Image (cartoon, rainbow, N blue to C red; front, top):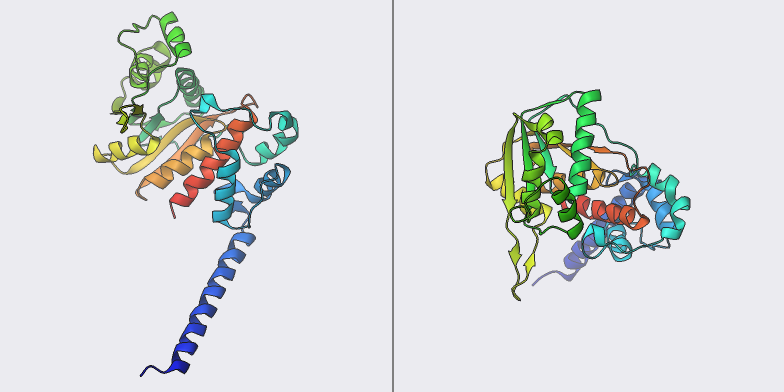
Length: 289
């Protein structure tokens, strides 16, 4: 027969242990100055001003910011959110390091990662890297393009046509990147560097429609293609630098060190874009745990 006193004692010990674990975890989080790389004081102030309630836990903050700030659809389709408060929120976006340029930490990289984006962002990223190399020279062995099947927007087609692109051949994001890498701005940077092109096909859904690949899809395809561990520089644009770092770190093994550099934003983006970048960064940081 099992001793009831023993069971009661064991149960008490377990409950006490769990209580202490919970309190220690909360205390540890409360005492930290940062969360997902963000200045926690600025993050909490932003949530307070925008009336995002939370329980002061990492999981609770991720959940509530997802509900309040996460966009639906593509980045360029983001609806306005708290735009009338942009001037008031500016100092907090500064404190959260979403505005100013991110510079590289090293001089030598095994490769540069170019993540798919719109044609206009691709132009801006390439030109930023050009400026970066001129003022703060870095060396890298190869360019890794991580992209997936996405058909071009009408405004992208118009811009590409002005540059002489044959739109019967340049139809997708991958086609656009290949075309752009042949332009003079990009050639000076990447030729004769080795270029590895990861082009992931779209997902076919049950109703027959296509869903474009995610960053995770392209990173996983790169790993399966024999990616070599090393130190890589992903170049981006603000306010997405911290998100790029968080998502790449969450997807890659520890043998891959990811540094991120990105051009300044100068408050050209809408508030909704900043908030979405914060939300996705918080979520990506949790996925690594």
